[in-house]
Image 1 (cartoon, helix red, strand yellow):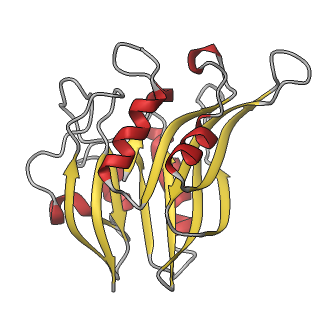
Image 2 (image 1 turned 45 degrees about the horizontal axis):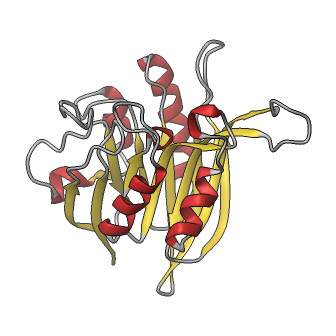
Length: 236
């Protein structure tokens, strides 16, 4: 599953991380890529370590990628981090977070990688959240992601909020190597944003050859400004 959790706040900007946990648990997803996850980041999320809180609440393994890593507001407090997370029912073998290209004014974005051991088979799971204001910047970020994807022959799943629609140049570049699972396994428009009045498909699950999409579903929930996308996959 991929889910932009908007730092645990709903479309009315009301913070309720427990709602996020309940959606993830009810989905039955084994591996979840989360975007916009705070760790002691700000008052907007009560300075909670949201990644650790969710992992503990759900009993899942955790990988985290801090794309923003700031000094604490008070000496001795934890560093303020913001980025992406991977929650997994399967063991996480290795993790790496790669900072993606950005302009001087753009927000720092990243690609979080986790090698998972899925019933004796190794799977590479990637999670990202691309720039929302500049297509030029997104294209440079996609090129960096493609270079990483092409650097391994492991079965690979890439998820995330790409801030680009299916007819865009960005998605065309990703799908040169990875398949967009929605046209294969989903029904309808697959819109994920915004959650109250969905009108765009900008959240994706991509899979490499050897990973087959069986069923894709956008969950009808409004606990964030995005709706989560759940895809059932099998590794051949």
